[in-house]
Image 1 (cartoon, rainbow over the protein chains, first blue to last red):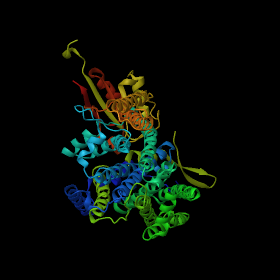
Image 2 (image 1 turned 90 degrees about the vertical axis):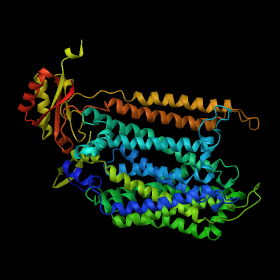
Image 3 (image 1 turned 135 degrees about the horizontal axis):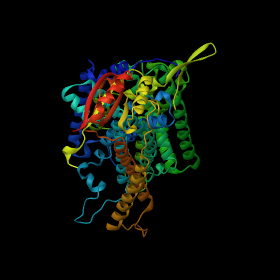
Image 4 (image 1 turned 90 degrees about the horizontal axis):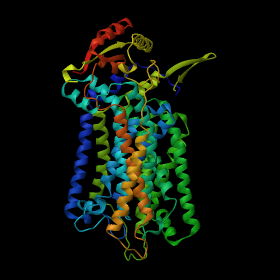
Amino acid sequence: MQEHIQLDQKQINDDLLSGVLKTPRWWLPAISVAFLVFLIGMGAFGYMLNKGVGVTGLNRPVFWGFFMVNFVFWIGISHAGIMISAILRLTQAEWRRPITRAAEVLTVFSLMAALMAAPLVHVGRPWRADLWVFPYDFARGVWINIRSPFIWDPSAVMTYLTASTLFVMIALLPDLAVIRDRTTGWVRVFYSILCLGWRGTPRQWKLQAVAGILLSALVLPVFVSVHSIVSWDFAVQIGTESWHSTIFAPYFIIGAIHSGVSAVATVMVLMVWLWNWDKYLRPDHLDAIGRLLIVVATTWFFFFFVEWIFALYTLEGPEIAMRELQVLQWPWSGLFVLFLITAFFFPVPLWLFKKVRRSFFWMFVTTVSVNIGMWLERFLIIVPGTMRKQPFVFEWGSYHPSIIEILMVTMTFAWVIFGLLLFARIFPLIPLFDIKEGMVGRDEIKIGRRTVPASIRE
Amino acid sequence: MSRSAEVAIRSVIGLFNNEDTAADALDALNRAGFDQNEYEVLTGTPYPEGTFGEAEPVHKLYRFPLIGAACGFIVGLLLTSGTQLAFPLVTGGKPILSIPPMAIIMYEGTMLGAILFTVIGIIFESRLPRLLMGAYNTKITEGAIGVAVTTDEIKISEAEVVLKDAGAEDLKRGWETE
C-alpha cells in the first residue's frame, strides 16, 4: 500500500460505526424498495406453488431455465467472498483488511439467494424436499438416495453456508464488543449477549488470529467442492451429452471466482459511495483487486477457450449441435456476443490501465459488466444445452421465461441487497479490529532521501 | 470448605495511554509478587505477542478440527452406507454401496465436522462466553490499554497501589465472584 492514512482507534470507531449507531438518510428508502421487490417475488413464488410449475416458461426438453441459471450465478458470487477473505488472510495481504467482512457477508446472502433460486423452487413441490434430503422415514424404511445430486448439492451448500456464517460471526466478536461499549439500554444488552463477554485479552486476540487462519484453511476446500458439485449437476446428467465434460469442475470454479471477485469490487465501490468510507477503501485497494481480476479473468477465458477447443476438436454431434445453437442461432448468437463482450473483452482491456483500476466509477461499470456476462454464460450453457433435439426425448422447443420467473429472479437480487443493507445497519461492514491492527503495525521508514510507508508484521 | 469461608476474589483495572507504561505496570505487578495468572492486559486491538511482556497464551485449538473431522467422517460414512444398505437400490447389477457419491457426502461431512468443532474450540479456548465481565472499562475499545488484576480481596488494595504508581488512570474495581 502506497497510501498512508494514520487514524486513532476512536476515529476508526466513529467512522466505521456510523452506519450502525446512526441510520443513514438513504437507508430506509433503499431497504424498503429492496424488501418490496422481494415481497413481490415471494408473491410470484406463492402463485407458482398454487398453480404449479406450468406458470413458468419451463417445458420439455428445457427443464432448466432461469431458476437454475440463477442458482449457478449466485453460487458463483458466493465463492468470491470466502475466497478473497481466506486467500488474502492466509497470504497476509495488507489490502484485505477493509474488504474481508463485506466479502464474507456477500457470500452468506448469495448462498441464501442460491437456495432461494433453486433447487427447491424449480422442483415444483418444495414442501416435499425432506423426502429427498433428510433421512426421515423410519417407519416405512424409505431412505434418501445418496446417488442423486439432489443430496450432493444440499450437503455441499449447507456445509458452505454454515461455515461462512460461523466464519463471519467469529470475526465479529471484537467489533460487537466495541458497539456494546458505545451503547446503552436494551441495545447494549443485545450486543453484550452477541459478543459473549469479549474483553480483548491477549488470549482472545491470539485465538482470533488463529481462528482466521484455521477457518480460512478449512473453508477453502469446501469452497472448491461446492462449485465442483454444482458443475457435476450438469456433468453427470445422462440426457445432455454436451455437458459430459471433465473440465466442468475447474471451469465452473474459475468462472465463480471471476464473477465473485467482480461482485466484491462492486460492493467496495458502493461502500465508498454510500457510507463515505473513502479513508478506508482507497484507490489502492481497487487497484489491487483490479490486478487480481486481470489474472482471474484471463484464467477463466483460458478454460472457456479450452472447453470450446475440446468440443470442436472431437466433432461429437451433441457438442457441435449445442455450439451451433449458441453461436449461429438468433437470439442465442446475439446473447453469446454480448456475453463475450461484457464478461471479458470490455472489462479486461480496460483493467490494464492503472487509471481505470483506480477509478471508482470505472471499476463499478466494468465489474457490473462482468456479472451481466457471467449470468449470460450460465444461461447459454443451460438453455441451448437442454433445448436441442436429443435421443430419447421426442420433443424439442425453445424457452421464453415467464413473468413469474423474471419476478423470482429479481427477488433474489433484492434479497441480497436487502440482506447486505440490514447487516450493515446492525453490524459493522468493515472489520474495525482488522483496520486497527493494520494501523498499529504501520509506520514510515526513511530510505535515502525518501520516506515510504511500511507495514510491519510478525 | 464452606462457601462463606472462601476468600472473595476481586478485580481492579487501571488504564494506560501507551504500550510502554502498560508493560511497565506488568513488570511492577510481577515485582510486587503477583502471579502471572492474576493479571492480564485488555486492549481494543490485537498487538504482537509479548508487546507488554505478558505470558504467551497456550491453547489446544488445533486438536478440535481433527476430532471434528473424525466425527464428521464417521457420521458421513454411517449415513451414506447405512441408508444404502437400509434401502437398497439395485442398479444394473452394480454394488449396492456406490463409492463416488459416498465420497462426496463423506467429504462434506468431514469438513463440516472440522469447522463446527473449530468454532466450538475457538469459543472454548477464548474462555467465552463470559457471564461476568469483572473489572472492565469501556475506554478500552476506544484505544486505552487496560491492566486488570484479579486476586484475593486482601491483595486488591496492594494491586491498586502498584497500578497507580505505574501511572494508571481511571482505576476501577469490579468483581468476579462473591
